[in-house]
Length: 192
Length: 195
Image 1 (tube, each protein chain N blue to C red):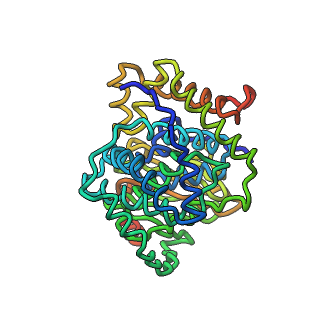
Image 2 (cartoon, chains in turn yellow, blue; image 1 turned 180 degrees about the horizontal axis):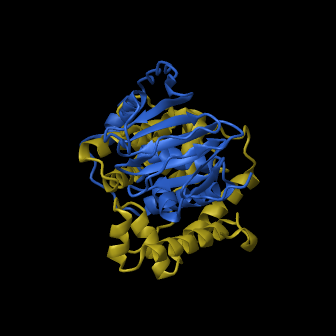
Image 3 (cartoon, rainbow over the protein chains, first blue to last red; image 1 turned 90 degrees about the horizontal axis):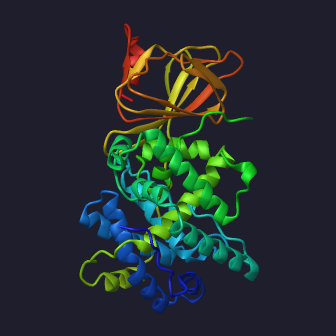
């Protein structure tokens, strides 16, 4: 498996905005067809059973519909927002006490009128991040791949890569710093 | 306030990717809420998760998955009843805890308050124990920890943390296994063992 994220051809951020503005079912169907199968794969990778993954993928997309007004295209790309919803639903599903936090609490309300410039800037940040993920040095891309979407113990990651755990951490640190720089929120002085 | 102890990179990546146990995730999140550097790491790792999500191979969905979703979006969302506030449980000597989370796998998260200058009995843990200092500070054989610090206590560590004398110490603690007291256990702490 290589990290080669396809640049999305459809403007999914605009689809979410269309759902918020006019309950656009066509936009929802487009989002669903693209994201629901990938969200299900993600949940399976986290160790969810097929039936739970299917149900949480449904719930993720229902949440996209219901909370679309909370989506701020100036702050996050569509895939990041949907990823966050799926991740939080998965965390909630592990509770035994049913004290489920209302998801609205974790999704902050957007600025009332995002400026077109801010949306463009967010779009460019995401494009730069996407490019930076693709361009990570192979040894850094490898630790990102192993740290994400594979439910393995730290020692197992270290064994699978054939490098000490300390090296796993330091490569991950290098990758994080590189990606932060790509997103433009880090100057060299801030590096850990 | 200077935070000196941070969760390491794999913990941050596992939090961002959704792999971290939810009880442990609460503790890392409490640290991140107080640490701008780690918060920026999580932000970029979460955005990376979004990028990687796009790259995942699509899974086969159940029959009529889209039709079912479209049928469900017309159903109004069930209002969740407000949750009752969690109760504080007094243990002994002014020490109290408040349970916050109980996982299906037995992992728990709770707040623990230790009065100024008081020491917890020496104990070990049978699983992971992660701590974020929410208020005050404490000292144990591994070091001194203040507000915002993240502390990981492995199974091998035996310690009896003591709150600093100037103020109470409130911590958010997650554990994946029960505590094990070293010595004769005060009866009140037997109840605490159920944590």
